[in-house]
Image (cartoon, rainbow, N blue to C red; front, side, top):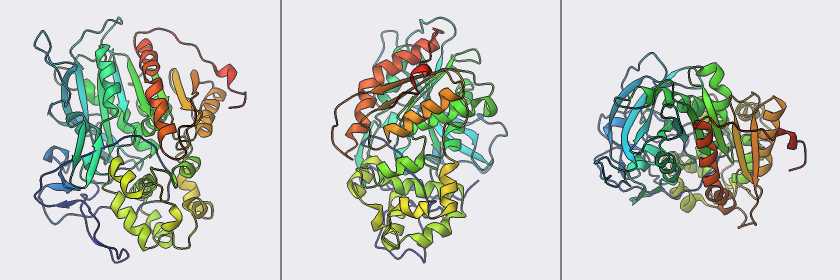
Length: 466
C-alpha cells in the first residue's frame, strides 16, 4: 500500500501556508459545487508521505471517518469486500411499507488493482432500491462513475450521498451525480457508486483521470456490490455503466477494459457523456477556464501513479506552481473554482510557457498522456456516447473522435451531439448544460438496455464532419 496521505513541507516548496491533509482533531464542514471536467497531465508534486500520527485524517477542516483508512492487508481477489457499514442517505423519504425511499445504502470498501498492478483499497456505496424492478429478469445494477468531485478525501462521492451539500471550513462540495443515482433507483435498478482510487481512502492521492485506475475501480464496484449482505443483485443481474465528464471517461475506459480485466462483469450497456478521451486536447480546454484547478489534480495524480514524473514536474514548475499543486491536492470542485478559476498555467511554470507547451517539448510527458488515450480498444456491449457541440472544457471534437475510433473497431455505438447555444466561454456552462439536458434520455437509454431491449448503432453516420 502507498503511504498514508498527510501534510508535510518540502524543501523545494517554499510557500505560504497552504491547507493540507494532516492528522488533528477537527470538526468539519464540507462543500461541493459541481460541474465537471478533467484535465491533462504532467505528473504530481504533492505526494503523500508516511504519517507519524495515528490520529484522524482531516482535509480542509473535514474529519474523514475512520472507515476510509485502509487496513495494512487487502483481500486477494479484485472486488472483494474489505468492510461495510450502513450509509445514511442525505435525501431519503419514509416509504409506505416501512422501507425508506429511494432505498437503503451501504458504505463499501473493496479491493481493486491500480495501473501499476498493485492492490488498492477503494471506497464507494451500494444502494438497494425500495421499488420493484419491472423490466423483467433479475434486478439490474448500474455502476455509477461520478463526474469531477476534486482530489480531497472529503470530496468522495459516497460522502456526498450522505451530505449532498457541504459548505464548511475551507471547502465546498455538492453531490450533483446523486440525481442520476436516484433516477435509476426510482426505476428499480440497484446502484453502486465508486469513489475511485485515492478519493476518500486516506492512504494515497486520487489518481484523477487515470483511465486504468478508474476503469478497474468501476468494474470492481460491480463485483463488490454482489457481495453486499442482503443485496438483491446477483451474477445474473444485467449491468450498466453510467458516467459524465470524468465519469464518462471512467465508464468508457471500463467498457474497453472489461473483457480482459473483468470477464465476469458482462455489460448490457454503457453511457459515456462528455468523456475526456484525449487528455492532450482536454488540457487545452481546462487551462484558463473556471476549472483550471483540475490541472493540479491531473499533475498530482499522474505523479502518484508514476513517481518518476516528479523530477520533471519539479524542473518545470515555479514556487507558485508548486504551492498550487499542494493546495489543489485537498480541494473539491467548489474550492478549485473559487481558488484557481481562470488561472493560466503560465503562472505555474518556471519559464512562463503553458503546460501544453511544456508537455509538447517533453517526450516523457507526451508518453504519459498518450498512455491515457481512450479509443484504442473496442468497447464491450452497446455504448451511448454524448457530447455537447459547444463544450469548450472537455472538447466536443475529441469526444466525437472517440465515437469514430470505436466505430472503426466495430463497436456498437450510438453517438449523439447535444446542440445548444454558446452559454459562455470557459465558464463550465457549455460543459454542464448537456449533462442536465440529456440526463433523462441517458437514464432511459440505459434502463432499456438493462431491460434487455435491443438498440441500434448509428456508426454509419460517423464519417461525416462534426
